[in-house]
Image (tube, rainbow, N blue to C red; front, side, top):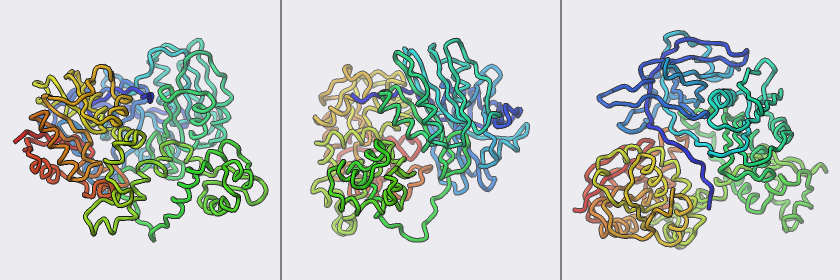
Length: 591
């Protein structure tokens, strides 16, 4: 069973605060203390909003700024339950960890690394009493395991707010072993250490992966059950993740590693999220070649990246022997891999090492772009032209069957769909708060988002009896992701309501209508949870329609398209619940 980290979700609310005071914590850290009525429960546009809550030591709030200074034009739309990120050309967002939340004083403390670059650091440098700031979040809080013998807290200067808050508030009573890399000794801070805690400070340049890895490896290995939390520059964390997973053997549910900033994409190491989430993607001067992507995919499939990571200094001939591939064939691949920084060396007798791009490919999430379900969808677009002519899906032309036909018999592929739906749990407040649940005793779930729906119902205190209407392979995969699977009836049957969560996203129109017809045999009320438009914060929003067409042979289905499928299947649309981030829940009643 796949280990899952536990989170508590929070309602997403747009809040306005003002600067109360600015403090200089160290020469390298500036603290801005914010306050305002929006930190308490308040009412806006006739809708009551809960008080601000950020109970987790590494919670994130998203600050909203604007490149042109017009912050109000950059604000997202507040929904009754959730946020919709409407398009805004000049919007800039940055994620920050609250250093302190003082409910009694009505204050929120945010710490900013002083480095002279980036819009958030610039805002903090000019912040004066009374200045306005808008933010959203947090969307969730990490729940640590209840019983631990120790915890590692690893990071650079951007992680100090989270580390400091952990030590101040102590969410668990276990010795904490802290490791922080700082650019100079002036960045050191007083930490609330207890007996049994340790603190190690290492002076290194921001983003120095070698220094961070060496320092982590030098830490003693405490006995017993432990947990490792790490936050720093994303590439610098890759060897740390590999070491903790492969050599220290920490399971995934005892490991939380987050890239707070990216050295190349943004040179400003602001606390978390330095990528400009709101800026439009820049068009390249010419259409890029697919060859580097195909070469990286082949390198992962053959094991080149792992082999070089495990044995740096391999000569090309030794690498070929290790992989069981004749040397002349590997030589076809290596020059292109070297050109794009997947590997370096190999042609001067020094042996092969991973380059910056290769180090990124050590991360499981990065690999998925080249070897996972998304990569297979991308490859199917080689058949886009005939698919558009024939009105079918590129996937069907590439594989000989529909995407549904593939995932229904492939546990690994269906598992990827389930994992893609994990973020759905943060968007379901609007659905779980709907009055329809007041009369629901039994709920039938279907679709890869079923696990998220089950978790959201549980988190909202909704306790209907749950059934799952899935075939053998999808049901087996879902059992590994839903909370308390033993409380669920894994056979389809009559229910007060059926929720199809992302069940249409891998179905053709014909298959979607077949599912809706099946649901009509079990219930008079159904809810379809689907993405009806691209996520407004995604830099890949323009690709959403093409991905949808590759999978289903239909463009991304908006509200009108979903309603048309429902009507053709004997359902009537009662209402639509906006969930945010482009997602909607469509409530259907049998005609």
